[in-house]
Amino acid sequence: MSELTAPTGAMAGGSGPVGLGTRVRRSLPTAIAVTILVAGAIGMVAPFLWMLATSMRPATQAFDLPPSWLPWPARIDNFEAAVTGPVPLPRNMFNSAVIAIAIALGQIITCPLAGYAFAKLRFPGRNALFLILLTSLMVPIHVTIIPLFVLMRNIGLVNNPLALILPGITGAFGVFLMRQFFLSLPRELLEAGRIDGAGAFTTYRAIALPLAKPALTALGIISFLGAWNAYFVPLIFLNNVNTATMPIALVLMLGPNRSGNVAEIMAATTIAILPALIVFLVAQRWIVASMTSSGLKG
Image (cartoon, rainbow, N blue to C red):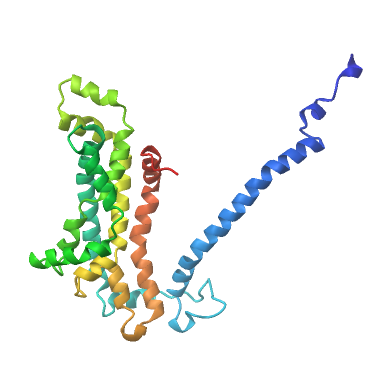
C-alpha cells in the first residue's frame, strides 16, 4: 500500500514545478497592474513635486533642465513674498473660504430635501421634473452666465460674494447624489416611522437624514472643492482685487505680460491647494462610501 501512495507535495503542486508555474501566472497580472498604477501615480504626483520644489528656490532656477526635484538650499522667502506682495493673498483666501463654506452648507441643507422628495415621495410630475433636473446637468455654465449676470446686476450683487453663493446653494448634481442614496434605504424602515405616526418631514428628519451622513459628507466635500477651485464664474462677477478668490489672485500675480515671479506664484499655488488637499484627505473615505452606496460606482 505504501508503494501506491503519491507524495503529498507532488499531488498538491505546492513545491513542484506545476505549483511554481501557477503562482507565476497568477502573480504576473498583479505585477503588471501594480507597475501601471505606480507609473500613473508618479505622473500625477510629479507636477506637484515640481511646484513645491520651485516654490523653494530662486525664480532663475525655475526652468532648469533637467529639473531639480530637491531644491538646495531650500528657502521660504518666496512664501513670505507671496503673502506680503501687492496681491492681498490672505484676503483672497478668506473670500474663497467664505464662499466655499457657504455653498457647501447650502447644498447640505437644500439637496437632501429635494433628493428625498424625488426618491420617496409620490407627487404629480415627479419623473418629468427629475428628467428636467438631469437635463440641466448637460447645460454648461457658459450658456447661462449672461442671463445670470444680468440678473445679479439688476439686483446689485455684482462684485459681491452673494452673486456666487446664492446660485450655488443648491445644485442638480447634489440632488441627484442624495436621491440615489435615499433610494438605497429600505422602504420598510421608513414605513415603520409612518406607522408610529410620523409625518413625511418627521420621517425624513428623524430616520432618513441621520442615515445619510456619509452622503452628506461627500456632498459637502465635493461642493467645497468645486467652489474653492472655481475660476470662470468668480472671474465674471468679482472684478476687484479685494473681492477676488484664490484662483483669480493667482492669475493676478502673473502681472502684465505674464512677467510675474514664477517661484512666488508656485508658493502661492502651494498655499492655495493646501486647504482643499487637507479636506479631501480627511474626508475621502466618506466620499468613497457615499459613491458605493448611492449607485454611482462604475
